[in-house]
Length: 195
Ligand SMILES: [Fe+2]
Ligand SMILES: [Fe+2]
Image (cartoon, rainbow, N blue to C red; front, side, top):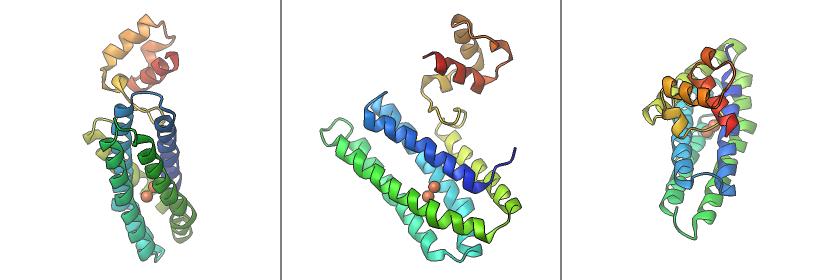
């Protein structure tokens, strides 16, 4: 089912917030998590800038707010580079906190100003068309960093890099029911649930 741009953007915000929570909690491989966040954040930002922000600037006459939003993307990416540089440092937690605060601020503005302005200025059909364009641009970006085939909301890691046959073999070992009918994403999801 087609989804509108506002819903897709918000869903991706929630997905990234789950990754931030894992980073803060110290669960999982820090380095891997930072790499995934970098890939998802930049794919999201580029897709917004290419497909959604220009429409908000034009249709909703929010040019200044859109420029401000794009500046905040750069600021967040800068703060995330700092996180990466401090990955083995005692200052890591503080860098994470500053990064997450910057993204939170941006997401709040986007969800309370830019996205409502977009919804107001466009009809449902346009929003769905924009949603498809946003998602295509985002997934294209993610593909280049190897995260494009990952199931949404769960992150990636080694499962996403395995072939379907390898995943199927692992599902057989774990005796996951219905595995022969599953596609790659389903297999990844089922294997993750076993973890
Ligand atoms: Fe966003
Ligand atoms: Fe944004």
